[in-house]
Length: 96
Image (cartoon, rainbow, N blue to C red; front, side):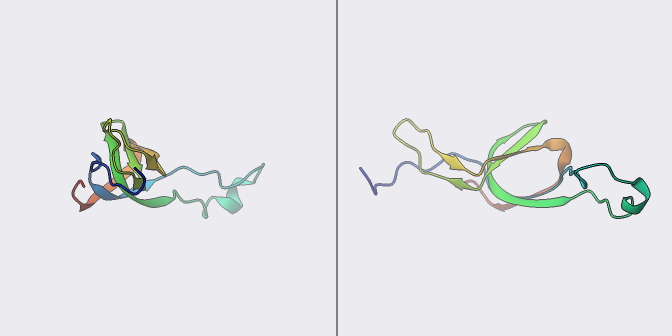
């Protein structure tokens, strides 16, 4: 029935993750000396609900739906962050 809330989702807590990413600072051939002092590892901050968490990866979703009658739910904006890139994982709110 449209408009009816389903069962609550079964995701992990809402977290703020600080992590480092890779980047390609140029799109073509470039001289090293003029660029070497401007290249920095990007530091990223991402907030989301934990969908999966193990020693290799942390998967977050920015939005979650209520569960359907089979207990499944939809998510939006999922991102997989390699664990080796995670610097800080701060819990903002316990699991819904």
